[in-house]
Length: 75
Image (cartoon, rainbow, N blue to C red; front, side, top):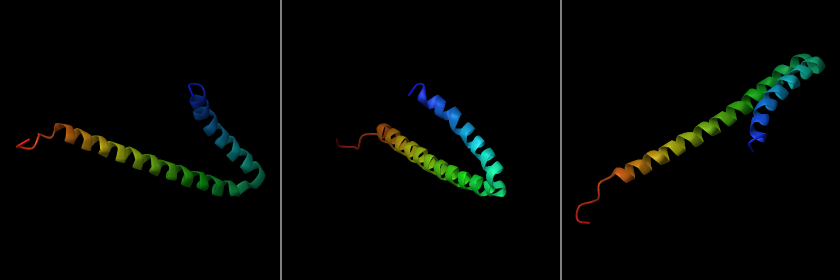
């Protein structure tokens, strides 16, 4: 993973740009539909990542509150 992750982070955007360019050469204006689809997919990924991070932060906050809560009287 030390090599694969940086390679994917570089080659994926380059591949998307080259794919859009080739699509422009072959199909002209249909590239706008392809770009719109890519934006929708990116928004879906972004919303999933945002939700996961928000839930993880909420869980950590609850754990921190539980650790700092004083012991109930009588125990």
